[in-house]
Amino acid sequence: MIKRYSRKELNDIWSEENKYKIWLDVEVSAAEAMEKLGQIPKGVASVVRKKAKINVSRIHKIESEVKHDVIAFLTSVTEKAGIKARYLHQGMTSSDVLDTSFNIQMVQSGKIILNDLDQILKILKKQAKKYKFTPCMGRSHGIHAEPVTFGLKLASFYEEFKRNRKRLVDAIDEVSTCAISGAVGTFANINPNVEKHVAKKLGLKVEPISTQVIPRDRHAFYFSVLGIIAGSIERVAVEIRHLQRTEVYELQEFFSKNQKGSSAMPHKKNPILSENLTGLARMVRSAVIPALENIALWHERDISHSSVERNIGPDANITTDFALVRLTNILDNMIVYPKKMLENLNVTKGLIFSQEVMLELTKSGLSREQSYKMVQNYAKKCFAEDLDLFDVISSDKLIMSKITPKKLKSIFSYAKHFKNVNFIFRRVFR
Image 1 (tube, helix red, strand yellow):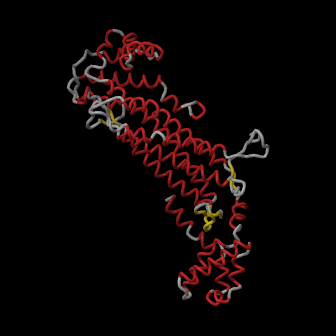
Image 2 (image 1 turned 90 degrees about the vertical axis):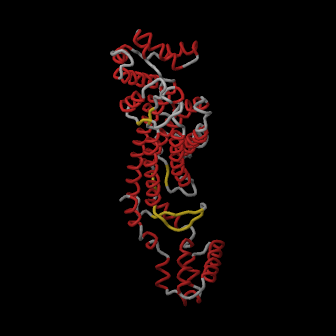
């Protein structure tokens, strides 16, 4: 991923240096097990661990000649560690190293992304409670529907990211497996206890059955979860973008003192960070379909998945991490305009209370169809002529014979819409 949309923590995980370091950990751990089993001389693992040095440029140079990355890596290690390194990789196949190491990188990334989710949950909880009873317009199809609170909007996001956290925990567990089972996964030339030792040493679980690769449904699940997280990021970003529109302007992204919004128009304050998140979410989701297509490899193995994972492994994880951190900062520093929210609530002059007027008429004995039609006709009139629904309803003798003035006044208030906010918050933040 380009530096503009990446953070050092994730870049380091997906660096060539770290990848080869993990490869070395896998090979040395396997050698330790082979020593205990008496399959190779004692001292191999310790010598290799002490003398081997990761030289990325040297590995690349060797690979340019041999056209095989694992062989290039082993050759480079042998150059530094000496003759004892010839005992590395006994009975193993390339995928034993590649797949186990790739899973470790996924786990390392996933744990950082879990921390990102914890931070966004912390900020959402804080802001939801701050704006718990701040009235704002609830919209469906982009049209004013009925009142909600800004806190409820944020609580909804909180609950969604809480689900995302659980999904990611499951996805990390899904890819926390190790396979050291040799060509086509039969352990023909390697003892299963080597796999068991490597898994334990590196904090993984043994893959119950591999072919020559770890099954890719595991990875597809992980990338699918990243795609869902990206969708949630965009859901929040789109809400912020909408609410910052000039006609709405209920909140805005923080705009620093020397920040410029447009090269042409000095008055502009654009929601550029949220727009950026929409774009980044598209990039993360674009990894999901290739990850799903990687499941169906030929027979025990082909390498059609390899080029895909070399791209989506770093890109999807790095981008998800960056997007979550950016969203956390947006939410923590956003500027909220409660007065504008209240102003927008009153834009339609009481039309948002139409449902309760209709329901009250049905309680008085009128049919739902008749009640709906009466209220809808008056709503259309108010909208077309810029009238107040309360005033129009108050002048209708039939309606007022069914609803008392006191009851009508209570209908046109926000209190009823917020009576269960505490109930909802208890369910979300229990």
